[in-house]
Length: 189
Image (cartoon, rainbow, N blue to C red; front, side):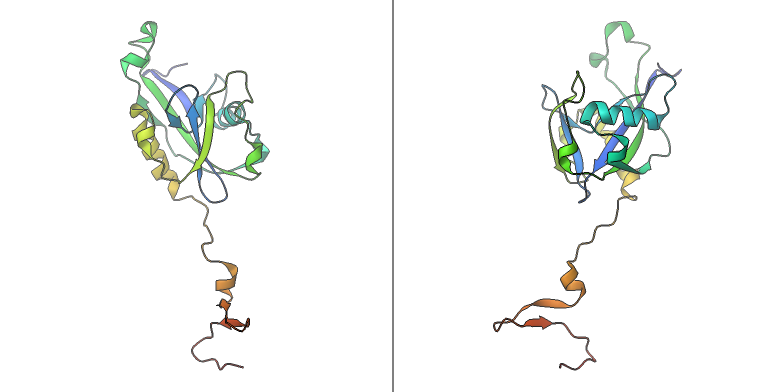
């Protein structure tokens, strides 16, 4: 199903863990890494396609994730002729994608690369949000950068300080008592 400009509707998925690291999948039998993605079938909404692709590619159900955000508009990339089947050349130009930012709400062990009979990935890892795009096939890099940039403002806030520092506890003294940080106008007990 192509639009009149030769682009196939598609979804892309940026899946976050609780540390705002992203799921990074290694394409089966290649050295390319990418986010889960896939085509939108006739009659499907982008959200329905995203949940189907999420289940097919990484084995997750809708209840395993929370939708954080999605791109406002389609992001497009063209596929070089050498990657297009001969019979599709001249008609097919590439993909237009709606990207979703999802938060994993279950443990990592819920991920299953063998959930479908045609796996897309043979390995995966968590990576920093700003993934190294040089490991992505070259013609997709621009769309990855646009999706990551647009969705970065929706990243869930991370608590970077420990609860002990928030309470003013610095650590233990040599005698084993706690050293606490006191406000400048407070008197020690």
